[in-house]
Length: 329
Ligand code: MRU
Image 1 (cartoon, rainbow, N blue to C red):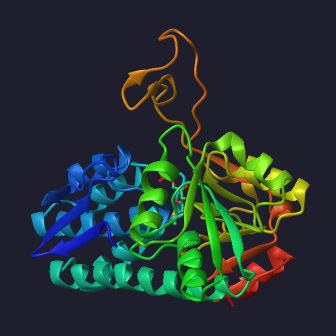
Image 2 (cartoon, rainbow, N blue to C red; image 1 turned 120 degrees about the vertical axis):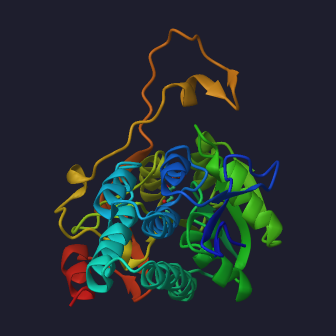
C-alpha cells in the first residue's frame, strides 16, 4: 500500500481525507497546491509529509520558481512533524550542490522516498523482536503505510510481527477529532488481513484494566533529545494508562524524526487546528456552534512513560538522552 507516487514529473497523492469511503488520487504539477494538501491532510503523517514536501520542492524547480521562497512556503504548512523541515533542508542542500538542476533534485526526492520505506522495514524488524507471542497490541492514530513513504513505523512493527505469526489482535483507537485510527489504520489492517478491533479513544483504559493489552506501539512526529516526543493528541493519555497498568509502551520512528536541537518536549511546537474539527464530525454539527473549543493536533509524552524507542538502527532503552546521542555518533 502507498499514498505517494511520482510519475512523469507529476506528484500523485492518495486523498486521505476521503478514505476509507473512496480511493481518489490527486495529481500535482505546481508546488503551491501541495502546501494546501499538507495543511488539509490530503497527505499526513510525519514521514509522508517530508516525502511530499521533497517532491513539491522538485515541482518548484521544474516550474522555475524561487526555491528559497518555495522552501519557506512549504515549511509553513504544518509546524510539528520535524520530517518536513528535515526533508526540505536536505533538498535545499542538494539544490546548492547541483545548482537547482531539476533532474538531480528529483533523484534526491526519490531517494528520500525509497530510504523512508527501507527505514520503515528496518523499524518493523527491530520492533517485532519486542512483540511477545499471541500479542494483543494497541495503537493510536495512523503510523502506517499511508503516513510514511510506505509500510509504516508503528504499523511497520505490527506488520512485521504479524508476518512472524506473533499478532493475535490489534486494537485501533479511533483517534478523534479526525479519526485517523478509524478511517486509516482500520483500513490498512483490514486490507492486509491483520486481525483488528476498532475502539473509541475512551475504551483503551478499560481494556488494559482487563489485561487485554500486551503492548502499545505508536508513531512520532518529533522527538526531543531526551526522548520526550510529540504524537497525535491522545497519545499521552494512552501512555499514562499503559504506565498505570504496567503495559509496555513503545514509540517507533526513523532517525529523521529525532530533533536533537530541542532539549526536551516543552520546546516542540504544537499545531492547533480549526475549531470546527471538534464541533463537527464528518461535516455534521455535533456541538453548539457558539461553544469554545480547544484543538491541539498533538500532545507530548514524557520519556519517563516510554519503555523503548524503536528505530531503524535498533531499539533504544533508558537512559534515552545518552542513548539517542550515541545513535548520531
Ligand atoms: O495529524 P496527522 O494525521 O499528520 O498525525 C499523524 C501522527 O500523529 C502519526 O502518529 C505520526 O505522524 C507518525 S506517522 C509514521
